[in-house]
Length: 278
Image 1 (tube, rainbow, N blue to C red):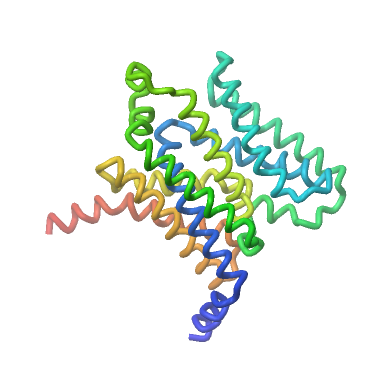
Image 2 (spheres, one colour):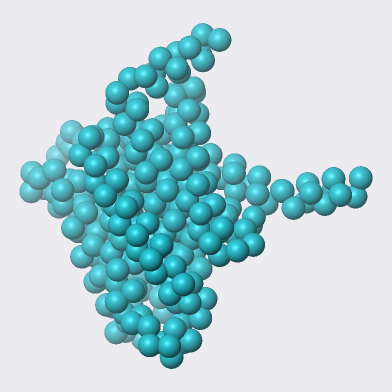
């Protein structure tokens, strides 16, 4: 009972309330865009973007600029650059992305050696520190969530067509390049803003796992997108509670919670089958 009282008191603190709100906002966005990301086979793209974000952070630290201020524009430029390379080269997608994120990570580590002791804490960058979320981050997350919701909501049929049958979308006159670019920019911004909470190493799982869990329990595309967003938000809140209860790092706690939800959705059909047989 003492632990429960302590957690209730902890969640009444302003910084903890900001952390929970940030988790809900980023969870909704990550789940929403993640639902399209996995079907478009861009899971490795989000992984590459997350790992390469460390290069943007390193540049900010080296220049003495707030890393978050550098990270978002860097993520967008990087994402557009990678998209251009994927369209213009004949290399396999996974091979090119492997080259890009591995080399970016290597350059980032070299740049950090010129900084000396980084007061921001490298472990916080790698595994996230949602308690460090500021009011400005929340405001940006709200604006970004509105932008993502409007884009997906207003173009849902087009996004479904692009996701499930791109050649048919092209034949119907859909501007694939414009839609793809807007989606990639939004995904880059979501990854960039989520890194503070989840960390560079875990951001891909944060985007992919809710969508995979939703895929196992959804029968309609619209339900699939909604469930993915809800799983992202709920897992963020439950992960924060887990983090507070056991004093675990916030980023890994959220991803572990997502994993438990994913495993539960895998077991659900078997459970229904067993109940039906009895």
